[in-house]
Structure formats: structure tokens, C-alpha cells
Amino acid sequence: MSMTEQKAQFLDKVPLFNGLSSRQLEQLAKRVFGRNYEAGQAIVTQGQGGDGFFVVQSGRAEAVLERADGSKAVVNTFGPTDFFGELALLDDGPRTASVIATEPTRCLALTRWDFLAHLREDPEMAVIILQELAKRFRRALDAM
Image (cartoon, rainbow, N blue to C red; front, side, top):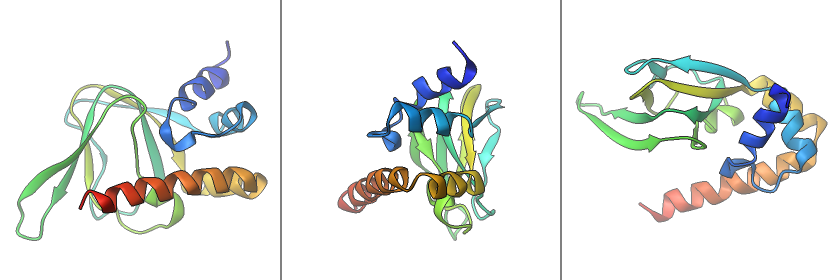
């Protein structure tokens, strides 16, 4: 099995990509790339520009929010198939929290420009992914 096929099989388990066809998953798999992080290493840093999206392939990480008073709070934890940075796929605003690997972690990353280029090639994929993002935002708002 090729690396692209392996990545496509993994991406099929990621909730954001529910509803994508095998062909769409394979096309997306061609654009993602792996990155390894050591325990304690920042994957993304709050306040810095965001240009990519990450899916945890193995390991664990936590989202840490630094408040205006300097205190920090863990606001989410991530394990395999969990994703973060989805807002960075849609705009280039600053990261809303830091994500720190809590153990050796491997992520699949997708840059904003690769994602947008792919959506231009496959508008149907855009609709499916945007519907999943809307569900996620709705659940986050309901939890408040």
C-alpha cells in the first residue's frame, strides 16, 4: 500500500472529512505531510499567524489558552484523529491558543494555500467540509 493510500485511510477516520469519497480522500492525502513533535514542543503558538491545519496521527497534545492576566488553562486535549487549526484553513488570523505535544506526537499537516487550491478544484468537497465545520462550531456554541 502506498503512503498516499495509507494517509487516505487515516483521513477517512477524521470527523472533519466525514462524507468525502475515496477519490477526494486520496486527493487530500496527496497534499498533507507529516510532522513529528517531541513532548513539550509547541505545534502552534497562540497569537502567531496560522497557515495550517493539523490532524493528530499518533501521540497526544493539549490546547493551552493564555489569558490576559498571564494565567494559562488547558482548554482541549487531542489524540489520534483529532484535529485543530481549522480556522487557519479559512483565514490567516492569529492562533487562538497554543497546542503543545504532551508526548511524542506525529501530525498530518495541511497548509491553507494547498487546502484552498484543492477546494477550487473540487467545490463539492468544500461544501462537505464546510458543513462539518458548521456542525463543530454549533456544538462549541451549545457547550458555552
